[in-house]
Image (cartoon, rainbow, N blue to C red; front, side):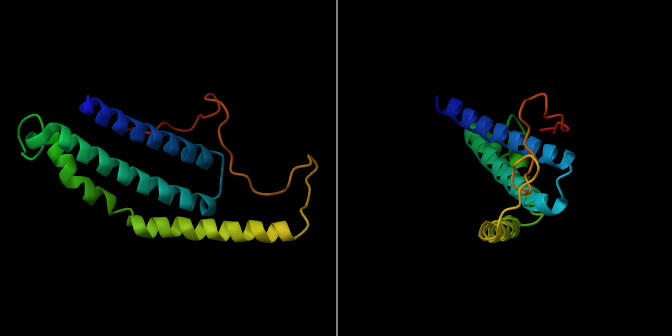
Length: 149
């Protein structure tokens, strides 16, 4: 029963990562400026690294001692567990990427606060003229390239 729980938790995290990846890809396809996607891409990479690390650790627990040797049924788990940190480092450390996301979020918050204190400009449709990041509303709208997990 505990192994099923571990597998379900790994599946939950991988599915959440896949969803996040699809949303960022959709925003990119819709032409959201890179300056606005930087923080999203950084957080996506951190989420992917943490998910990979968690899944490798839990798979190692499931396979037990056979995940420590380079032969037998746990050889793939041993390799993934050994390489998990090496795959996280090349794109930037998690701390640096999270700092980038935090700085961009603070900057956006300050800009929004500044806009609240000034008179809002109305567009012809009656909506505030703020930049809105598009989100897919239906599965058929999300025609972004599929990631390979």
